[in-house]
Amino acid sequence: MERRGRRFLFIFHFFIFFHFFSFLPSFNLIFDLLCSCECQTLWKKKLYDATAGGRVSEVSSLLRNHPEIDVNWTNPDYQWTPLHAASRYGHVEVVKLLLAHPDINVNLKSRGGQTPLSLGCKYGQVSVVEVLLKDRHVNVTLNDKEGCTPLWWASCIGNHGVIEWLVASGRDLGDISNKKGNWNGKEYAALDIARERNKTEVVSLLERFMANPTLTRREIRKKLNFTGLSLFPFHFIFVFIFIFGSVCLIFHFSFVNKIETSLERFLGVQGGLSVCASSVPLTFTDPAEVTFLSLADCGLNTVPEKFGLIFFSFFCFFCSLWCFQRL
Image 1 (spheres, one colour):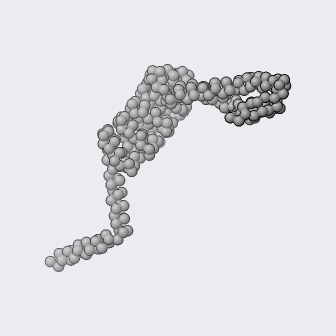
Image 2 (image 1 turned 45 degrees about the vertical axis):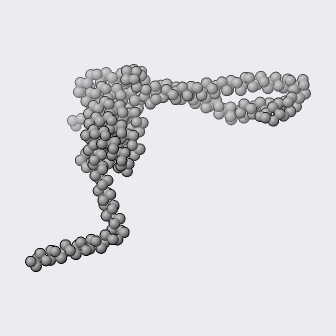
Image 3 (image 1 turned 135 degrees about the vertical axis):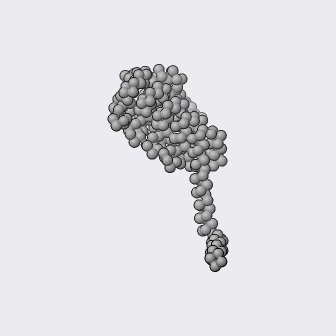
């Protein structure tokens, strides 16, 4: 009985102590903070499980109703983010939802040093690779801890479709013949590992790409109906600016000079001319003043402005060439 009484008193005093400190603001703050952290961890795990299972509606609901959720949370086992899990298991719609989140980090590495793109290439998820490559933040040359790139993994498993999308993306794939990855204790380049594992279709594609990257990329893009980085609008904009700038230069150096000469001859005969600049009529008797007015009207009354227009026009021309090469 005495032992029971002591136990009862201990529990009673504990509750008194708890209720007393619960009225303190700092205690409430700490308690709320602990509850908040616990809820945050719960939502992160739910999001990860939903992405791994490909439950699109659940993922969409979590991202919509909990905007504060950490989409880059990593599980303790493989250090995978939700994007890693969705890419590994080929859940394309989930990948699209995650990529649309403003806080997503598409290049985080797992415990083995693999990015979501690496996992997609390693496990042959062609549709996932296609979606990831359309995000300009995705880095296609990051190595894992074995030195293997996404292209290396695609070459190793012999997934021709994944390699086609990598080539069609227009990204820098690195040196295919020299960048090494570890396989069974030996180092192989992407092309070498494809040969070693008798992936003849992949070997043929990589050899064609190494011989003529531009032509091979265009052929594959035509086959996949892929427009790369959507450079068609930029190409035509640069071409238009170059043509417009060239016309301005031709007009300035030919027609304006002819107008100035005609005005000077006319002034020499008549002795004066009334010219309207903007909305104010002005009268000039000095030919030099008329020359200055015509140049100012053209917006090119100084030598730096002329050369600036020339430089800008040719800059747009070379930009259009660059865009055309990347198409």
